[in-house]
Amino acid sequence: MTTAQPLDVQPTPLALLLLGREADPRSERGVECPGDLPSPSDPDLVARARAAKEKLGDRVFVLGHHYQRDEVIQFADVTGDSFKLARDAAARPEAEYIVFCGVHFMAESADILTTDAQAVVLPDLAAGCSMADMATAEQVAECWDVLTEAGVADQVVPVSYMNSSADIKAFTGKHGGTICTSSNAKRALEWAFEQGEKILFLPDQHLGRNTAVRDMGMSLDDCVLYNPHKPNGGLTAEQLRNAKMILWRGHCSVHGRFSVESVEDVRARMPGVNVLVHPECKHEVVAAADYVGSTEYIIKALEAAPRGSKWAIGTELNLVRRLANRFASEDKEIVFLDKTVCFCSTMNRIDLPHLVWTLESLAEGKLVNRIEVDPETEKYAKLALERMLALP
Image (cartoon, rainbow, N blue to C red):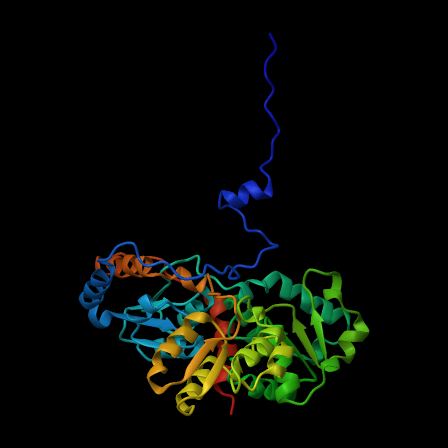
């Protein structure tokens, strides 16, 4: 009788993925289009959330990003974009708990800007951002080595979008750069060009390209695209020496869906429509639109729009739908730019069940899902943020 030998079987990447122990590097989190969002299964969740929040009182401050579900937004003390919310959190030092209904990088920024006595909580730790995930600290460090070898690193100033991890913000601060939002990207680039001859723009190629070309009069030839998955970023030393804007190959998985065909289709369906898109959209989409601006710009534009006007909005669907309902009484027709309905699936991981669990846990004295940035990372990330705050 022979003894059975143990099989040398290694789990496949797919098996690990299904077990939840690995990620699929070829996928982009945030691109699923589930159609309509399901309702909470427990009809008592609203009452439970309200009761827990009332029990906590001023000890808790709930932040709600514009892209959140309505069921979550109703419990937010303030709403806004990522940077506005982080600053709102910093302005409430008396709040023991900051519950951030958004995604991971936003909670990190709030932790950086709040006091050590405050705890920033993310209701679901899996609420990430596909764009932020497209630039890791290791990849950016390797990019800097490539720039050094090409002899241009001393001419380069990094500018990182707010939609980036704390590690990337820290890299930016350590290398003399600044952070920007979609509202102040032009001012940030102008400042950076006063410090150096070139900019490394992280991690959203579209915001960097649109700001440089549309707002600052550069040409597309002034921009090169650094691909972290290719040797030397897929660029030659000569290309790096000739470039003014070195754009990281990253993008928003939701805003990247919009196309020129989407614009042409809505113009054919709705004569007289105003097309308003976010600058995270592709350059050709921005060029085809009537108006371009940040989330706050979009909201203010619709507030100021005349009665009876028509608008097609190129940004996340939760916000578009909320604005359409808000302005329906003023006969403003507001539609989603793309015919395919698409939510940001990672942003929508913050649902009512997760929020209720978070609030009830805090009310019972149990701190859950705390987001903490280590002191060294926080030091340099805060430096980069402070440079942005000092921009004229």
